[in-house]
Image (cartoon, rainbow, N blue to C red):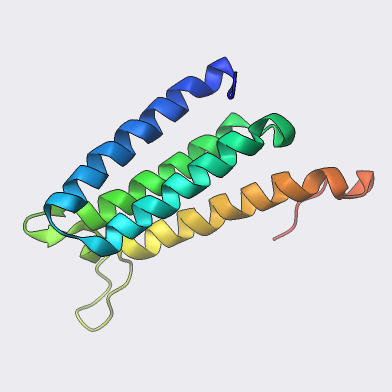
Length: 135
């Protein structure tokens, strides 16, 4: 089997989300986000092809799934006629557009990407470095 039994729900959610958002973006002729769907499919295939060797932890895979869902939702869903990516989550002032949904997605994305990179390089770290975390 390409994936572990406990990873099947992760794969099913990803496949369903990709199909849903690909259809949504295609119906709207949103080629930018169709390209992003292609990127998500590419990395999904890479993860499937390397999971046996790398042994990705499920929490990392759920993190990647969350990132993909947040990203696709940001470009495809509207609330009150406003694209989710343009919504301000914390309206500090009229002058500064901080803290937007887009910024939140990037925070999550960089955090998850960091976890993926750590998991990939961890086997190569000295044993005494595997126990510490630094920010």
